[in-house]
Length: 359
Ligand SMILES: *Cc1c(COP(=O)(O)O)cnc(C)c1O
Image 1 (cartoon, helix red, strand yellow):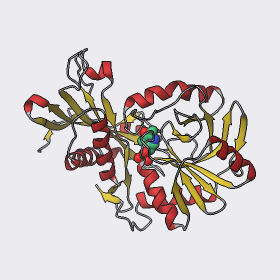
Image 2 (tube, helix red, strand yellow; image 1 turned 90 degrees about the vertical axis):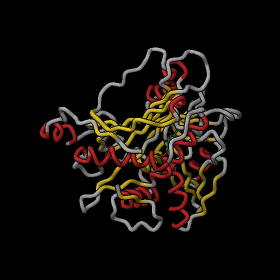
Image 3 (tube, helix red, strand yellow; image 1 turned 180 degrees about the vertical axis):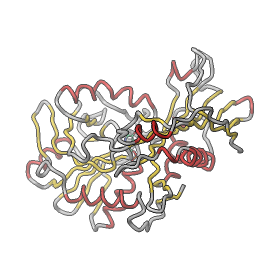
Image 4 (cartoon, helix red, strand yellow; image 1 turned 135 degrees about the horizontal axis):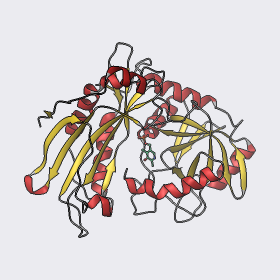
């Protein structure tokens, strides 16, 4: 498929852009362009691929996404390399997961090649939005939503696939600090048979009240337990978890359909095994978490995801009280894994896995 280029009449002037990307934070400094591809079941599927000025999207008030939330997204990054080029980290995994999410939400798949081409085109076009700061990246947000004007409940026949970019420094203000976690008592994120393994906006909508509760309790993030027994630790609102134990084993909750299959999670499983640790994907209970933290058997708990890379969990709070992981600081494995991942992404650590794709 050929992408049409719609010229931008007025990209942001250099001085304004440079000011905007000097300390962009996360999620608010958007670039000049947008990639769009339309889907119409009656027109043979995907068509009208284009890149043009970033502008509001016109939607019919009856567009299905506004009523029934048929929507999916991805989160990935482009990183600067020393030679002036850019790289992405395992982007074909994002393309695969996008299609897995699409299947669960009864949406059309998009070929991995087209997905990657759209993402690459966006990054190349807005390359000068890469923030010139340590840890800076272009956060890439591909998404798809049902645009058909129809209030009957069935999968829509029309969709839009869109890629936008966000200039990004650090996800958490103030760099790597251990996060304080609140154990949600009254809410769950995902149930067996539900949409927990799909990257869909509804999962995030459902997490906002428990996340607000976490903030109200003086914590940074919420951790969800399983819906059936309210006993097994699943994940944070947008990050997977690893439990690093003194006996050389590491536990991460298994992908049973209620947990988002993180690409950082998958990468960490491989990297921790290369460290000689025995990584097991098995259920880990909230009681075990507390007991092993208190006995010292648990050395570290890592939270991981594209946005925040690897972040140590410092304390865990629930109505039963608070417990601290290790010293409550940044553990050795958190540091090591974080440095290695960032090194791979920036091209400073040799890529033995073929994980890094030049843009
Ligand atoms: C995106 C996401 C993650 C992390 O996935 P990565 O591919 O590592 O970025 C974890 N949990 C949830 C709920 C997510 O949406």
